[in-house]
Length: 116
Image (cartoon, rainbow, N blue to C red; front, side, top):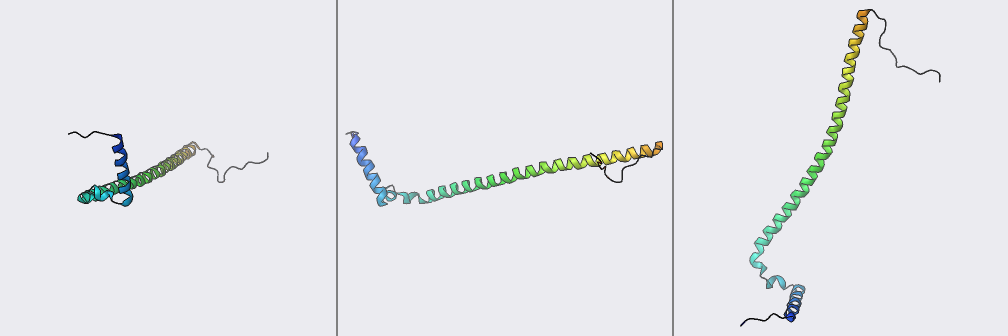
């Protein structure tokens, strides 16, 4: 004897399901108590998964911020290296001028614009 499928049965099943959820009887009906440990374990796994992903996002944001700071520091270091190299060249130029007997030296004060 096979049971016939009727559209009316779907409506009554949905109604019973809705009422059992509203009454708080749904969990007992599907016998969740047998699987409580598994549900708790799954919840804990999801919690730690979400927590770790948030911590990783925070770490990645920190890494990006530090990468920007490092890039700025590299630019600053390159500028200082160029300044030191130019000072070294100026010393060589002064030595060459002294060897040739020139009276040209580094100015004591910076240049000042006079007039217009």
